[in-house]
Image (cartoon, rainbow, N blue to C red; front, top):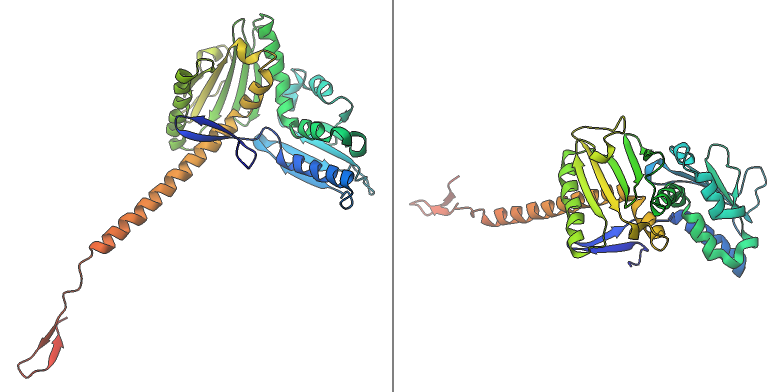
Length: 322
């Protein structure tokens, strides 16, 4: 684990950063206020912050509406463009079960809101901070838990149809449950032709990782066209810059012991993939610039010295031929 708090995945190509599952701004905001409350180090400050996260997610951290907000009560609201699709899979009930009395009526313009009364929960502040900072993760978890339970029950999904979550414009996640597996398919759009090439190399490493760890899920990549699992799904995007990544999760990945960690890792795979594509391109550009600078130094050292020499006339005067 690195000092920055991010997890690190070690594979054949080196250390790869896993993006944090929680929102750092929410975490630090609540930590500061609980610290001020419990230690008496200064007054609990009023907060009103809007935070952007991956996939068009917006958070609003505030002390509520009105001219005289109460700094002892913090509201955390989330806005997701695809929340209505999550509601079809019971996200509201899942959040009520996860957060209990913290889950309140949503703030205007947002989809879900949590109300944290600092003094009432200060004895379990660490637990509350961890739960609240994972609000977006828990919204996704509602869908995953539903389909994990279907697989554990031996079902073939909800009427045989996958869950379809349009988490970004032109990009979709599909989740299907079968008696022996759960398949999670991400469609993603590569904005650059180079990203397609790098993406194939990157995902090939996932397939190679299966050789060293037989318990790892299968990872498949298809370019341009959707995989066979989506053969009956209408409006699946196709094109030269479209890729589909399929994860085949087996019962050991979705049982009650490992399901939470599986959700942590897979719900933001798209962001993880594009993050590392950008890092790879930045690294390649850095190496290219360094190599170019090195070659220029070699060329400068190879430049011949000036051969202009002083000459003298028969009368003894010096001159230089130009």
